[in-house]
Image (cartoon, rainbow over all chains, first blue to last red; front, side, top):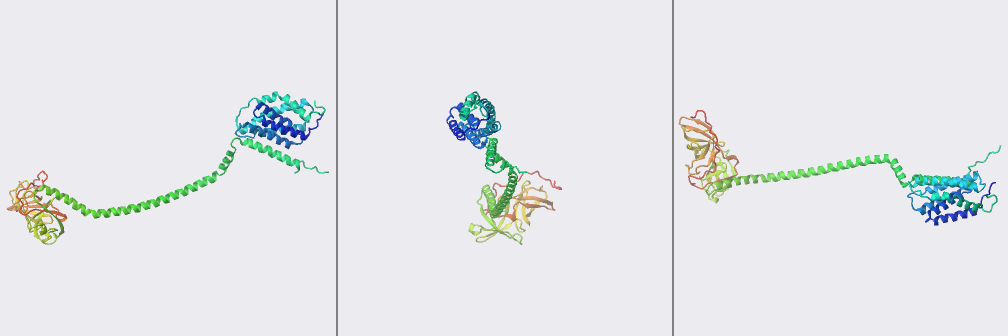
Length: 161
Length: 295
């Protein structure tokens, strides 16, 4: 069963709040990485509205790199976010959501792609850099933030399971 | 059949797609540029401007070489002119100083001669010569003002010159020893034979009254004998140039040692000098050349 798209206002408010939390959680890299992935892959993509999603993803990338103050040449994270958000939006348009499991599976796949593309783009832009372990935190906590975003976007709608 | 509307019309969705594409391409390009993106522009600009830079470099090098060549040529010309001017000045100064240098050399020689002869010698300058004329002589710049009187002997560092012939208030005339009417008492250094020297002109003289029994060698030194009471004994006169045996006497030709044509300073002996003084000139001890026909 095809689920209806969430309210646009609600989605934009959620994106704005998450972006603010990303900025504020800079001292906690794991939390920032989870929030960052949540905004890019779960909250920002919207079928048929790629431009707002792309702008949120780009903003998230620049905020993350700006707060890290680590790379000599920024922009790799924003480009990876943009690409993955467009891909997620395309997937959502092409194969609409049918339940939480599909949602979690799609998020897992997109998270893996995001991690790889993110580090590749940063390497292209800024050169070799330490990966850290935040990507592992993102993958391990995927059920948590996947379920939370599902509830926030499609919380009271029928057939959400 | 209805025509299907194009999907990429310039509506709002099309503008959004264009913005997305530009956003994605812009970010991707920015990522691919990597660290220090300005270096790509610098490299591209350097690559594109390489031909013009090479051309400009060659043009500037050519201009610089032309300018340097012109500057070098101008500098060399100026230096050449300066050196030429300096050379002219030096030549002029040398020409001005040459007579004084000659006089100085002559004065040094005279001073040495004066120190060797223990007599009161007086120096005078030769200001004119009339030797080419008949009965000519040398004109000195001193006369009675220096206490000169006729028949005083005159000598130079190279040898005797002559005697004072006439003395004026400020000038005196010297009768050189090569004059035909001049005579000096001489003796030969080795044979000790004495005779009278009479002038032949042109720096030569002849010794008279030498017995043909004497052995005279060419190159033998001829000294004053002191018998004429004009020159003391032992002053150099010249060297024997030729010896011809006559019926009664030898005809000995002498090359006078004093350069009579090139004198500038001379010394005047006192009147009636002593017969014997230490001879200042010692002839070199040459190996005697035996003249053919002489024993």
